[in-house]
Image (cartoon, rainbow, N blue to C red):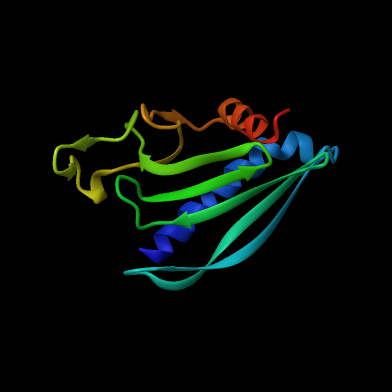
Length: 146
């Protein structure tokens, strides 16, 4: 599970780099990568990639929270001066959480799921937004208040 999670984190950051490339080449935006230590039950201690994006005087951090979550395969938070956006690794077909009386209802086995990164809107009516360049930049501007 740890290897799969780290691969998903890497693919997330590859997408982010692709979205930012038109702005990083003329040096309007910079991105730097690092690592942090995480611990999760059933996974143990591990190092996971992090990122920091600088836009003007604003700093935005991308913090992988973990893979052991209810209703998602993983989460990365984008934290800026004006707030936080949650990126969830969920079933590509999911439009929102599937919660039923008694907890999360498993509709598909993990092997049948095609995982995709999506933005989770704020509660109480959580929706999943498909991650693409336009949605990413809108979220990025929300956390830097640009």
